[in-house]
Amino acid sequence: MKRYPYYPIYLDIEDHAVLIIGGGNVCARKAETMMKYGARVTIVSPEFTGEIEAWARDGQLALKRKRYDASDLEGATIVIASTDDTSVNEQIAADCRARRIPVNVVDVTPLCEFIVPAIIDKGSVHIAISTGGKSPALARTLKEDLQRLIGPEYAEVNDLLGTLRDSAKRVLPTDVDRKHFFDGIIARGILEMLREGRRADVRDAIIAACSEAGVAVSDAVRTMNDGE
Image 1: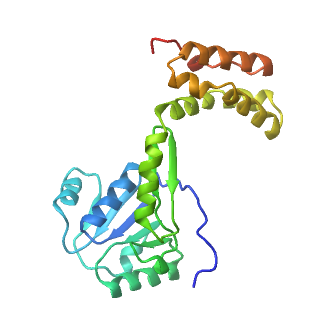
Image 2: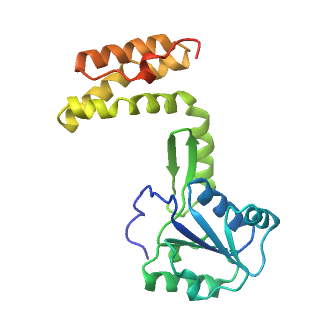
């Protein structure tokens, strides 16, 4: 029995080789997500859905039209097993562990070295939701609830503050100083201002905070106006 919960982590999978075994609808969902985050996806299965076949024809992913064997793991960074054969899934998990390749076996948490969260994608803001593999249905419900609460203003603020980071690092010497600076900007109510369409007020609030801290104002902030 697992003693500790999964450790939440964000991975850079851009241009990494992700192997998925199983060519059905579940595999298609997993492949679509991995491609969205820039992975190089290869799928191993004797048969594939029409959607997967179309992606392969378009050059978006690679197919191996065969049954799984351990040689398929060569070069893989991450592996997802989504077959409907328990013995195959168990073998994939064992083979991956022997090679120290992180593996996810869909809907079989005890065989997983990592689990895939429900993801909220709001531009540059991403939120991952997990129930530790106990209740995917609850994770989906949480996702739906949060999607209603989190508007586009969060991503816009994130992008704006991101344009100030380099200057803040040069001017503000410690993490504590930078935290105080960025927390102070948000505390001026810029999220609420954006919800109300007061873009010029957001611009002025950020410029004032930058002036007080000696941080250079970015072009993205300076050019904000009510008509954008």
